[in-house]
Length: 209
Image 1 (spheres, rainbow, N blue to C red):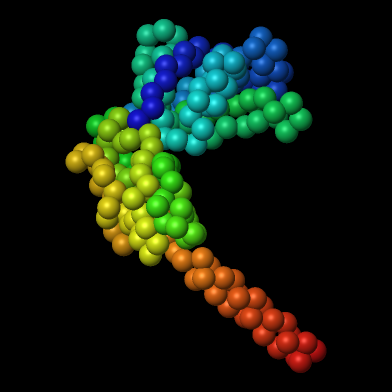
Image 2: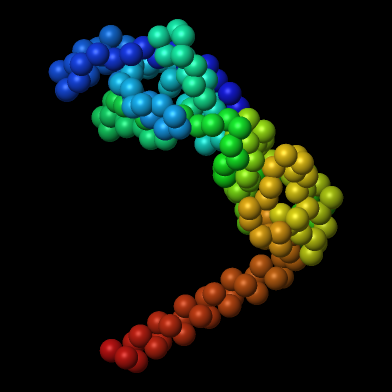
């Protein structure tokens, strides 16, 4: 899993006025809570946290949060508030986790290569973009890669075919399809069936009126 280091300072005082001062200083108000820690008001460097969030891009990640340069916590970003006008951070919630306790994470699935079936005129259908895995946070992969280059027409790839580390468990059904290659004629037939169903519904609605 991706890991990043973030420094935070204890934040004294609350309220809109105090938070405005913090933001003007290039920092973002934050709060830390969760496993075995009392809720703490903090502030973090806005640029740094924004940079880390852009690097994460929806992938699971653990932040190593150092508070006042001495307390270190494994945390997840639980919630963020963004200014709708300036698109800048307004507030961040950090949730402390136990790195030795198994948790479930949604891990993105990345597809590489060009399927042989596509070169033969088939249609590639990607059906799964995220797979749910359970394990210790630091042992969860930040992405799962599937090489689709060997798929021919009528071939498919299911969750049971995933190459997963021994330290994590698949939480989705093993027969869940990830990707498949279908014949172009099958795609056309599916589209025709959908159009026919839509037309039938329209006629029924008109008759009811």
